[in-house]
Image 1: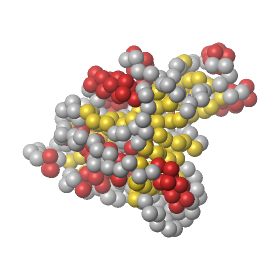
Image 2 (image 1 turned 90 degrees about the horizontal axis):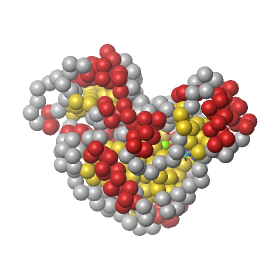
Image 3 (image 1 turned 60 degrees about the horizontal axis):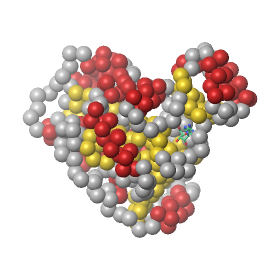
Image 4 (image 1 turned 90 degrees about the vertical axis):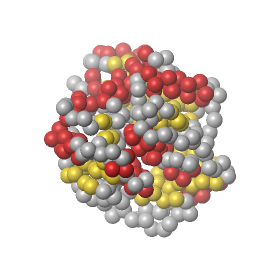
Amino acid sequence: MPQTTSIYKKSIGILGGGQLARMLVLKARQMGLHTIVLSEKISDPAARVSNRWVKGKISSVKDIKKLLKLSDVVTFESEFIPAELLQKSTKGKRTKIYPNLVCLGRLQDRLHQKELLFDNDLPTLGHVKVNSKEEIELAYQAFNHRMVFKKRMGGYDGYGTFVIRNQSELNSFKTHFKGQESQFIIEPLIQFKSEKSLIFARSATGQIVSLPMIQSVQTNNQCDYVIGPVKHPAEAKLRRQITELLNKINYVGVIAFELFDMGQELVINEIAPRVHNTGHFSQDALNADQFELHLRCILGLKLPEIETLHKAFVMVNLLGQSTRNPLIKKFPTGELHWYEKTENRSRRKMGHINYVGRNKKDLLKRALTERKGILL
Ligand SMILES: Nc1ncnc2c1ncn2[C@@H]1O[C@H](COP(=O)(O)OP(=O)(O)O)[C@@H](O)[C@H]1O
Ligand SMILES: [Mg+2]
């Protein structure tokens, strides 16, 4: 590990080269910080903009060790690198990994995450753990033939989420995942009013700040756009409960809570221990964005008080539609954040656009109109 004195001489290692890593790198560079990205291809979105790039796999102990050796502090853009693998890689090394590996281990598995929420009295949907075809059948009866299978590890953007509404959907799930039952949890399929999210940042010093609550709209179980700020009667209590939890588990970094708005109640759908798609609005709507907050957290810097600079904001994702080379056909009036991905594919996140102004409805109308036909 390099011997350094100033924050500005510290090297921040990032595991992964996707868009979240890229936006961390871009912010770090703006702040005068030094970044090193570990990823497979030099054309990866974050590798293109980082001060230094290490070629390798985030699933390889050898490659992770290489990154650790070069870095003073390491963070990640995906919660799905097994915590045990990182533990193995850090043996005997002084480099810190944030969020810490105990938190990561508990949050990366949907079953352990649920248990953490239950143990701490945070509101979430009930769930069952299943090990056999018979137990699945029992759950199907208990949840009134409407339920959702969720992959314990590695699910994102709806990949890993399987909705069951009738016997034929159940049969096809059982055929497809025969013998893999224990890799899933089951939740009841519910009807919510809307989906919301709350994003918090906790510094290594223990200071906590949070972003305004937003509403997110998913298409095919994947975030399509975000509107904010929004309010909810259960928000203040939930914010207090989340703050307590983060202090208790000594969480360091940005963390996102995806919520179901049930009317009077807010329940936590899932937790992502990282910067999050529903927090991208912060780049243009707040005085400090989630990427800066995450960097400040892992370096133990003071967090600024969060100010919302506009009465209304909207973020729309640009999702791949074809396999043609991704290119922008026309420029929007909103702030375009482009990830420079070299390959396009259906539903792949290629970029996003932030709109700020005074009226949510007007912004959303403009955003959805401009988004049409923007990608080649
Ligand atoms: N129990 C549920 N009832 C109804 N819809 C659900 C349920 N769980 C998830 N969904 C829908 O599927 C989406 C993706 O599920 P989520 O658990 O967030 O997994 P992922 O990790 O893929 O984001 C959610 O945003 C929501 O729209
Ligand atoms: Mg989700």
